[in-house]
Image (cartoon, rainbow, N blue to C red):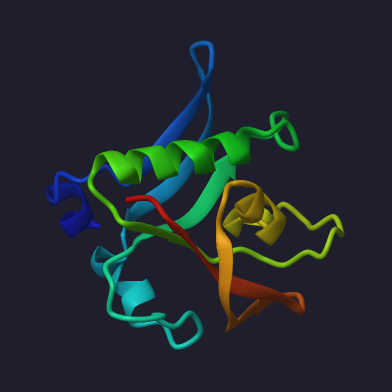
Length: 140
């Protein structure tokens, strides 16, 4: 945590409804996320530098209202403003089914696809049998 705080790089973006913060999305260079760099279940696709969208937190009462999609859009815009070339995410492929908010914190494939991301490869990671994917969007 100390390294993250000292990096000067904000760890994500916030969503507000008026003055009320209703969500947060983690977005930062993958190279600075040691758990992700060393992950055995979410592989690196290649050696190109990417920014990673790792998770979403949306305040209870504001879920299923498009907050996560707005956060993803904001994360892409922020990464682009920091000269990112590629933004990557690791969402669940719910295949249209409703999923528990306990698992939805990584986002869904359909949300990422709606935001212009493409599936690159399945991961070895899953939640309750629901597969996660590496998805990418070129932003440069």
